[in-house]
Image (tube, rainbow, N blue to C red; front, side):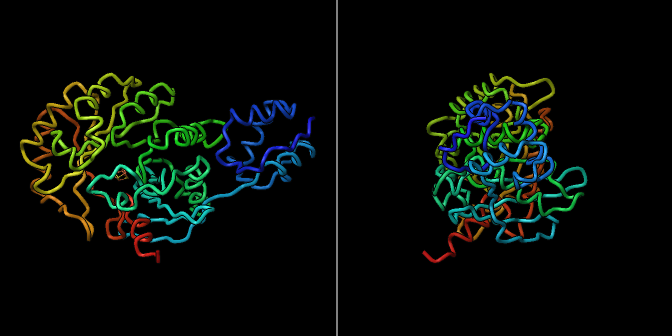
Length: 354
Ligand code: SF4
């Protein structure tokens, strides 16, 4: 076995199978050993190479010299009346992001972040007020799942993951794709592709790349308007990728049998919730394999927008159902603890001394 230890020590979490293959080849260690190490780390939660007793002492020493284990630190937990828990996590450099764990009878879903802040500047989103501080690394993305699962009881373990926290996942493309590969790898985190959803504001070029990654991950598209003028105002990315371009991409996007895209539509009173909006939305989505999630806006102090009335929400939904769409009303979880889209970390950052 070669003992070239010239590499800089790096976080084992987030290290891809591919880069381990290259490292092990350089060390002249058999590739099947990667599976053994992954089993220790991801299936037995082992965080000490010396405890990996089916590896040689020399390989254990080499791994310990070249890798360390670091997970985000949980710095606060806020419990919602609906059973959700909002976590604020601190990264090694002090950056903070949020995650929300949401239990239901059938699943335990974790909403994770991909960036510290976001640069897409959607006008209804509190995270946007932070701007983009930096991208999260692959280790920091999967680390949110690993750190939170480590403190949950057996019956509370995370079953589903949604990339809908702070940041635009496809704006941090490489780290997100590597994180997804580790999440769905049978050797690593072993999460079914059906149980992972990536939300995007519609970065069409990145969506085209993403479809070629062969990940079979569900996409949720944050649409939120039925005409370009309104979407330009709500989501400035629309000026680059207007609705017709986005819809065209969705129509051509290859999907596995039985899979559909999710269309997310945040309903804002008097902005995008009229009967005309519902009709235009139904027209746009004709021919797109999708279900529609209608999300009544969760207002926050500095927001110019208000939530729609229940009657308006139901009328909007009923029209879509009449047009043969699967349309659901999804109330934001954990609204009493600022659970929607980046609100806790944004609030924490805004109240921190500058
Ligand atoms: S809604 Fe999503 S994409 Fe838009 S600013 Fe907020 S985090 Fe970014």
